[in-house]
Image (cartoon, rainbow, N blue to C red; front, side):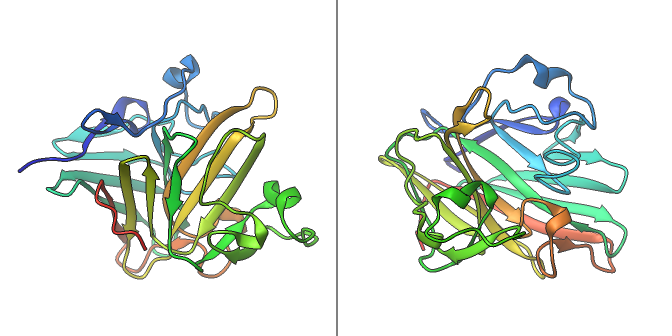
Length: 272
């Protein structure tokens, strides 16, 4: 079998993905920060790039979830991490088309959570994100000054349609402009085009809400020392902060005590 994508993870440091390579193309962006090596549960998030597993929330508490700061164990192709309220297990499998990662979250029935494959990608200014035209897309308050209408009082988010929800075009990245915007598309598939390179991302889970999050930071975050970072993040759930999740906005553990989902990455884009 000819493997087209090669994935490397670091179980000792939160299960972080440190490389996603297609031949000579490294897809994951990295940022040096020595503090990432010595984090502990409850610490503020340290952004070193790569892909972080964010669960049971992305924003909110705990910051970027409860697993990125804990050591994982590895047994063959399977890695796992234990937290107070749940256990997360993933199994990575190379395919002829790319990489598949099968997940299980074990917790008490009724437990609610958000999960994101928080993938920060190394993209050029000409890169584009292709997703299904017209799909419902949520924008969050950091986008308020960029929209075609005033932000509603006390709104956690507003909704529009891809690729320009509420007048803000999001499918192209371009040069740094000092903005940082988060969005969540109500679809589990998207594809990145960067020159001749392609990366398709997809997530599927029976009975759970799937989506695709975008973090388009063009030098607008953090305020004190901003840098450029682009996140394309397959998700379970439809909001960044579990505390803001309404009906249908978070995954829920069924009576079996387990939620299953699959993340797929391929360099073969069948764009929506």
